[in-house]
Length: 552
Image 1 (cartoon, rainbow, N blue to C red):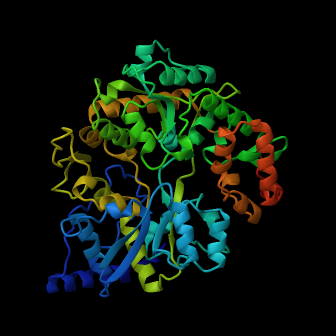
Image 2: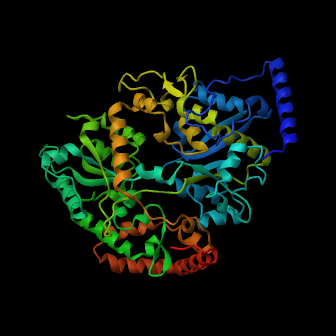
Image 3: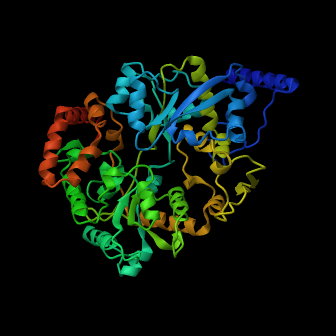
């Protein structure tokens, strides 16, 4: 916190800066500024005005993010991009990655000394993360973040402080939700309710009933075209097998550790992992699971569901993801509206009798900064992040410009964006300002969960909002959060970081599609992990847990 005398001096400087800017005509529009309508406790600080950020040298900042190339396609007309680039005297350039190749691309760029200035990835507590620090591939944040109060508040959160390495931060967590509970819609199962009704399928309650439902989707010609061209259940990408494992080893989905047989161990070493693999093998061998799931990339699985080629779909089930699916759905012929055709079901119960719902830390990914970023550019980046984490930055990112894209009715946001002629719904902010899909997600992962309800209904439609709200309420009421020891999950030890960086999904896929006994195959896989430090990781974590007094 600033001392009183410091505050007085800063206030004087800001006042003089404002007067000088006004005289020179150099002030910027404050369109889109204003407090977050949900903000009542002062948890965020207003970002410094653009006049206080008068950096004369224009800097180019490269950004490596998912689908970044789609965000800067309309640079001359994109008013949001122009505002950001003008206010901070920068040019933002994309370095594109996809959801299927981002980790590999970042590793290759790092090894080739070609890392973009900023990348967004989930790398904390992995061998790559520690190697990049040791090899000087990424840089540390400044020790003093007081010039960037909104960034500083993020880094001072209790669950963020332990993330320092030798007393320094090497990343900024991209906060996703205000609570671990709000992650509930991040993993789920979307099913064709109309097909269930057509085939006389009752709502399944057990794994066996779910499997039989998937098999009927695959075998009973639910679309009535007299062709054997449907699969039971497919996935957004192969990594979404983690949703199917929530019924046996739920900690796999959020990279948690379990206390089992008197010891902390990673999910892959749990006996429950064997049961999960057996279930997946059963789904695969019985024809319930899409035989092509190992080959799915990008939107392949989504397209199958939208095209009447799959009866169920493991994916996120948040309103934005359902809207994406609805948009795909609208590209093809259907006899029923999307909202009337689907139902959100929980994952089948665990052997302990509980149905579990997804939880996670306050962040799942982080921003990293290339070691080539000098102090001047780092200062500019942090100023930009500080604005994006401020109430006015949040409002601009979520709603657009006040007076043009929305207006305020007391504390209520009233969206005024144009209507899309094709859908009859209000256009998304990213449809008007393509850069929004990067700007909104750069400093934090903004979910539509926190949009004002009236805006959600205008943007997504009442039926989709009601469907999502009902699924959320049901999961919160009937499912338990995945048992997660967050202090163990966030713990860093040399061997743990190395082991948790293993791409477990590759071995899981091999077991699922093979013919040999899953238990024997996984035993061999674990032997391989032992050569990579599995036993050392378990030993280090248990010793450190004992030192810290962490109890199961």
